Amino acid sequence: MPSPFTIAVLLTVLTMVLALCFTENTTEQSHIAAILSYWEAGIWNNGLLVFAYQMMLILVLGHVLVLSKPVEQLILRITSWVTTTSNAAVLVALPTMLVSFFNWGLGLIFGAILARKVGEYAQANNVPINYPLVGAAGYVGLMVWHGGISGSAPIKVSEAGHLKDLMQNVSGSALLDQLPDIISTSSTVFSAWNLILFVAVALAITLVVHFLGKRAKPSHVNLLSYKFQSSKRENISGAERLDHSKWGALLFGVLILAAFMVQYLPSVRELNISPNLLNFFMLGLAIILHGSFRSFLNAVEEAIGDTSGILIQFPLYFGIMGIMSQSGMINSISDFFVSVSTATTLPIFTFLSAGLVNIFVPSGGGQWAVQGPLVLESALQLGIPLPKAIMTLAYGDQVTNMLQPFWALPLLGITKLKAKEILPYTLIFMLVGSVIYITGLLLW
Image (cartoon, rainbow, N blue to C red; front, side, top):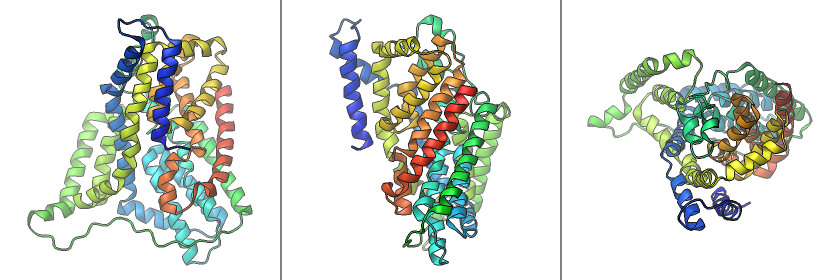
């Protein structure tokens, strides 16, 4: 497979060609000039650029939290309970899914480091384990993240005005009038049906990794000790001491959390989580847990590299969305889906198509920008509840992360495993998750 950036470039060219061949030009410019104009406008869409920065912060702050001392101690505590492959896989998979439900960036790095530390512990204590299975268990959080608190689609639609801004150049006034100002996470992430599906997936995967662990043959483990980042204090003098001040970090972190309570407490009570709410809370918590500005900044420096894909690829996805929305492609595609679907089958088609799109757009935020308008348009035309439509896209996007290795790259780098070693197990996780999600969509 080419790199995700190359795939984004190829998708951009493909979208331009399809728009040129299958849409009509309604401007005074030439058709190709109009399409290029739509593309440029989409790339620099201010609202979507803010969205990209919000997603970058979710990933960075999640990674920063993992590198704090309290989380390090939690990871080391969990590894001390390892006795066999089956219990090692369970000890990695279940905590990783729980953490990923809170924050996908936190869960991604937490699962990777936990799997690495389990491997190190097994090596040091002569515990025979199947390390690839443990590594795969550390990646399974990416199969539940989009239905969780930091899921790109559900938390973005909880922001006032986002839905109508996204659909402005897509739907006519009649359908736009049907859009609410917000769709609260109380009706998506925290709805009873979503929580039931999450628990069902978490329990099923836990049982599956335990079953696989009973039958998997031990593998050779040869790992050096993974070092958590540290804040060096030698040769500190003058005002530089402020960087290492525990009281300074504590007071500023408390100040952030106080402002968080003032600004967001009503939203928390209503279970309406937005990207700004989540990031503001994690910023204050990360500074407090690191105990100094220097430790926090060292962790940020280590984590920032993870965001390169979001930084450079998201604008290309926004450009694709700009072409599709302003050229009328979204209306044509949604009309097709509506013509061959019913209120029962459209969610299944959406789930499957979202899983397919995720192979080429390996980012929930980027996929929401590209596919979200199509899903909303189709749901409005068939009268499907918008929370269900949004979560259906989220389920399809997250489940094929077990097939798409893009987000596994940090885990592979930390665990020193290869994609081919974890893929047989993650494919099993994908099949189990798909059965549960499709069953849930049919019953809901």
